[in-house]
Amino acid sequence: MTFPRINTKTTNITVTPALEALLIQKFEPLGRLLDDRVESWCEVELEKIAEHQSGRIYRAEVNLSMGGKLFRTEATEDQIEKAIDEARNELKNELLRDHGRRQSLWKRGARTIKRILKFGDE
Image 1 (cartoon, rainbow, N blue to C red):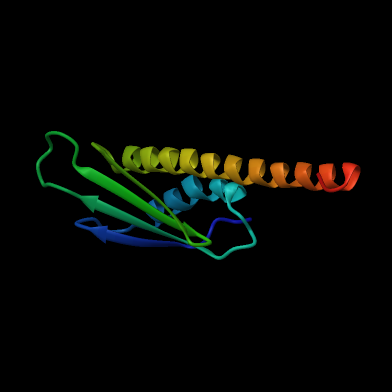
Image 2 (cartoon, rainbow, N blue to C red):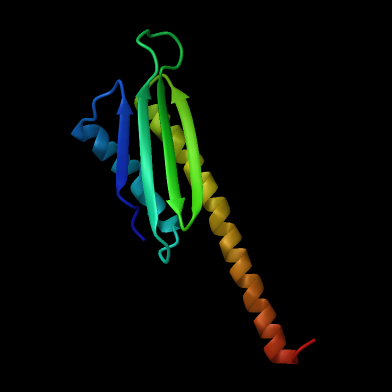
């Protein structure tokens, strides 16, 4: 499945075409982890927290809804690209965990059906 269209919200940052392309480039590969049978949407919020240059000043928040499940990640870094990367990595970990749960549930159900068909109702 392809990754859903990314709705971008910004605070104290202007969205450039390069930033939009970066978001698509970073999040598009995660589409293979999504369930293609359910509707999904993605919102990315990018924010410049402060005007000073000390400490972490950029925040990236990603909300991905897939079939009623909400996956939410947030990262704060000193560069916007680093914040996007960190949020993407956290989202990937959550999606992999959910993907494994779905696969194991499906396999467990298939084993039960096979056992019932093979040996009858036990």
